[in-house]
Structures are given as structure tokens and as C-alpha cells.
Image (cartoon, rainbow, N blue to C red; front, top):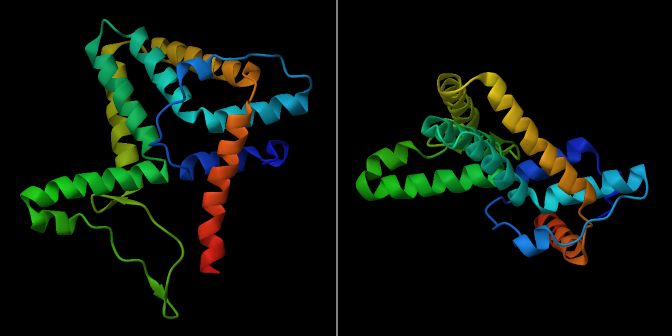
Length: 209
């Protein structure tokens, strides 16, 4: 993949649709080799490649910094967890997997309730199901849970500590992510992994056409 031609919007869409259930990259690989980019184009290409490849590591890093910043305040840890969950719900793969696991668990105790938690059927247009997919969680649109956990996390942040402290901790986490993604040299494994994920994303569309 030529990362120099990938826009920020394309990167955001890819991070939203890609599977986030994969385990983080090993620590030895995460802190392996660092070099300064030779040009602005090399820097932007490296930044986008690392943000995609080490996405799970960066997510854990930001949540860890938020948690460490408020280690003496258990409510803040719950707030960091709620914030991470609200962000994770924006990813299609996580939302679908979460919905399936919750529905499967509820079905063991109440099949009737589990049936109500099924997502609504896709509309049929000219004899074919609509290609536009709407993600549902527990029978409700995804945005309901995103807003719900966002409000809960904001309330927990406000009651546990000052908002300025939260912003500083988040800024440190984002800055650490930016510095690592800027100076971590993409290895061959990262490029091959990107090609494989790109191929898996393209293959279904080719087979269906």
C-alpha cells in the first residue's frame, strides 16, 4: 500500500472498519528501531502506516497513561474504561463482536429477550437487501451506546477529578503516540501485514462481483 496516497479520511475509515480484536504487537517489536524521517512525505507516510499497524498498542498506551494518571482515584479508572469503550464502539468489528457475545450470553438465560436484541432486518430495495449496513448493539443503533458511555465517562471524569487534569493526561497519551508513530521505522512485517489485510478486504468484493 502506498501510504503517501492515503488521506486522513481514508485512514479514519480503515481504522473504523478494521478488526481491533487482534492482540497488540510484541513490546520488543514496538520499541525496536527508531529513525528520523528524511522528508515531510516520508513522515506522513510513516505516521499513517504506524497508526494503522500499531493501532491496538496505541489504544492501550493512551488508556494506560490515563489510568496511571489517576491511579489513586478508582472512579477515574472507571471513567477511562468508559471512555475507551465508547471509542471502541465506533469500530464496526468490535461493535458487531460485542453484540454477538452479549446476545449469546443473554440467550442462555432468556431466549425471548435475546430475540428482541436482534438487529432489525435490512430494507429490501428492488428485490435485493440494501448494501448500506447499520450497526446495532442489543437491538439499538450503535450511536445510542456511544452517546451513553460518553455521557457516563464525562460524568465520572467530572466527579473524580478536574477536567484540566484529564486533558493533560490525554494530551500526554496523544503526544506519546505521535512521537512513536513519527520515529518508529516501519518494518517489512508491518508492510506485509497491511497488504494481507488489504487483500482480505478486497477479496470478498471481488468474489461477489
